[in-house]
Figure 1 (cartoon, rainbow, N blue to C red):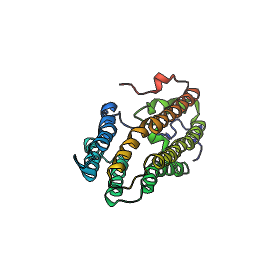
Figure 2: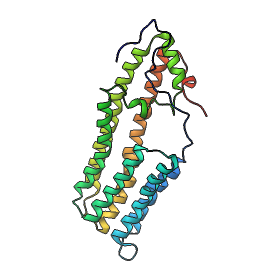
Figure 3: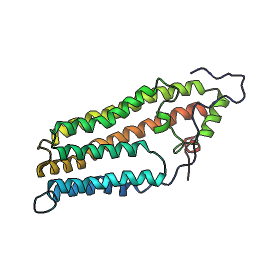
Figure 4: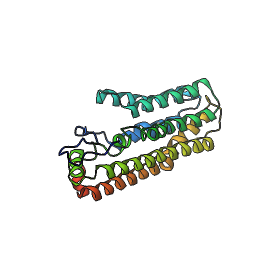
Length: 247
């Protein structure tokens, strides 16, 4: 990327400004629907006397699948994370119904965050690093105000370099998630697919993946966000509260 012309009064913004964020659903409700309910169904309703292995698997996967489809319809636009969630759910169902080896479940668990991490890493060599979409975005930050302050201080290029460094760190969080997902799945799920034991282990994997993988990944993402905010504060002179989008 070329350096902005110092003589130009209105250099192009390196961060695409967006619209104010839409209201989001309760995260506890999302966890209940996509994590707790499926895990309960898989662990408690997979016996032949209840839903059976196949019935419980299909019923459990209907919740995250339905949530992903509903989220896409609610926003009336393509949400790639929802799409990946739907695809991941369908792959899990396919592994169970086709009775594939349990190692394929571990591969699937690692593939989704691994592919996202690879996409983030590759985007660092383009004009639009994905960190602007996933972390430093218009839903969290008032990009117009940040851009204006960077222009006034002629700090666009230093901030661009911070974003590039942050992109490598963001990719590392997804690679961590991919590795942890694979190891946890291999450790927890060993029963043949399509059996009651497989469903119970899959339910246990669903429960364990949240505190062992999701929460640490979330903390790393928050740390990266605050590192970027701190960098922006140093380069813009704005307080964090002035940069964050309110309301």
